[in-house]
Figure 1 (cartoon, rainbow, N blue to C red):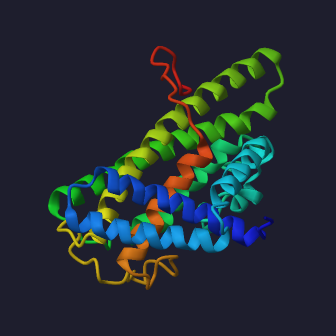
Figure 2 (figure 1 turned 60 degrees about the vertical axis):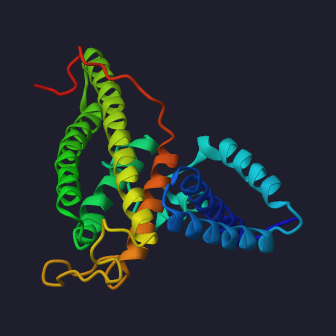
Length: 269
């Protein structure tokens, strides 16, 4: 059965949502949350069946996964939307003119989006004191990652200017180590954010106690922010989009559990 590109995108999105609800069903101890998750999961599966009837959805998803795996080596920032529709809602760009590593550019774009778009909106979600403090601590980690990215950009841009071969070799080695550390630290940060906001979203869906304004809409001071993607969106939708965005960002980076190199300097003195 041939599906249009839009149907393929919708099927992939529904599949990701179904996996999330299956995870809730496996782990939750809240009866109300369990029942809500089962209802939502049935709706999602019904939609998947409507797109790919006769139980063909799983076969089509497997075929799409294989195609994505084959195409992953050819991916560019411009075609990310074909595989990660939520991620592509935010601007994706090189972190510097000569940055040619796709994963580095994705991570840099995600961090910029988090600082400029997500953080101003997510601070409008009212959480209890402990969760608010944890949310604020994320910005400190973000600042550290932005400093890493700035140093990495300097190294990347210095490489074409180098004349001597030994200087080029040193800069290349430095760039590799800095990129490795940036991906490791950035990947851990995104996983931390994902677990945090996934728990918040699940609590909102279950009408739990963690969020105090779950029925409000995001309102950002236009004197400080001329525009924001989440302006006017509901808290529920903002939390849902955030979880999906982080999920796709982690998938797009496809990071292994890399060990850090603690014995070698990552910055230029």
